[in-house]
Image 1 (cartoon, rainbow, N blue to C red):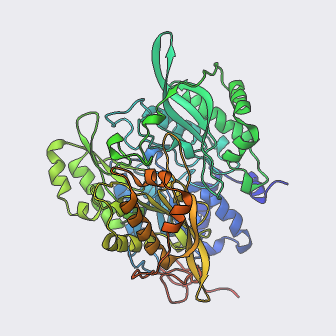
Image 2: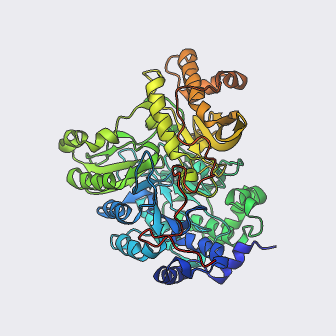
Image 3: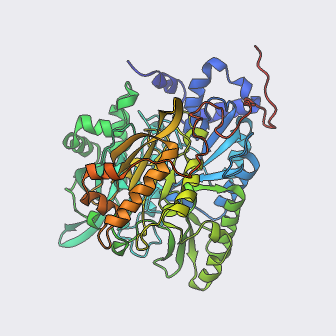
Length: 588
């Protein structure tokens, strides 16, 4: 039986949703019939408008889309001004205040606490500088990932910006393909580090070369069916297909159309593209793609996967594991990668960052898959002055080990799926780890990723140390907890974490992390990274070393477990409210 959401989408979806959303915004929150809200909220997601969780009725999250992480001059400033003027709510966050920008793991931006009535004005401001929210959520092609320094990287292997731009305009922009069976992720990697993370995307292009008529031709190998969620992760599997840059678009589109036409629309727990690849197999998919393109598919070329260093657990002498720091571009200018803890930046700081990008660079800012921004095109003569700016003390290009490696999803602060609060907890944990844990001075990377549930938007499965939100009983009380795993990573041979402890109360996790890091420091070989140490150490030994422990760490919301309307509010929820914050009285 077709899932009910398919019936909703058949009635109205894609570009047509915008007009209806604008009608509701003009008439106000109460104009959405209560019995129809689930279906309208499902449709709104296509335009990046997500209703927040229970207790926060009438408030929405807005997700933007910017292909490959590129924010052109003026765009970040407009986003920051929207966050300042419209993305403030009825309660302050104890770490971040009110009104901020969240950088995401798909190189985009999320804003919270928006009122539906303000969406038209927000769209007008964003779209005036070329920022869209179209296809940012729902059963659609999501923001396309690419190397954030594509076109500027000094060591770029194959150019990807023209291809990314075409995928954005012609493929994601095609309303006939708006209604996918489930959300769908595309990545294009042209660099040698593998920073677009091809192995965890539904369809991915990885850099490769192939001999043709005696000459080496640069292009891509094609992979399909990668993903993380639901505790059923998959590595994207090779299709034994090589395409040059002129034909890459056609092959990606062919797979998108195949999944669009043949994907499962009945069982939503088993219909992501990775399960589609499980069912069909790569041989049949390759044959189907051959029927859909008007040229012969070449067999795979020689890939560069052995050179991948991005979150690959290799020593930094092999290459970059992220984009933080000062790096030379191909044109002799520099980009400066800042570290934004858990990807959250207050609105005023985002505006200040846009000002710095204008003053010291070209005005362009790019976003990475590790929730960090890059200031692009900085002349060497301006580097020292930029590095002396106060904002770079807060969001440093040379951060401590723990801050640099941290990522976190949205969590119960706003997400209806999450089981635990994430961003504020991670910020507090980072402060405690910095003060209480001595890591080896020669270690430059320790990736700690925190997801509030098994959907794994925080990419815990690919971390050195992965945390996923759970609940547990402690002293007779329900508390927020985490499952903890180690040994994940993205590289030549991607690996997912192995669980070492489950349902660890949140206040015992920092002590566990300290025990694990101190064991690593004491037992590692010279120059060994955490990932290498985990690989060389037996799993049972890791379990013994990863001992949970109560410490001086004070958890910010241990017993909330999603009981309140907002993890940091003691009063009753005012929601739903009018745009000025006045509670809307029920008709009952």
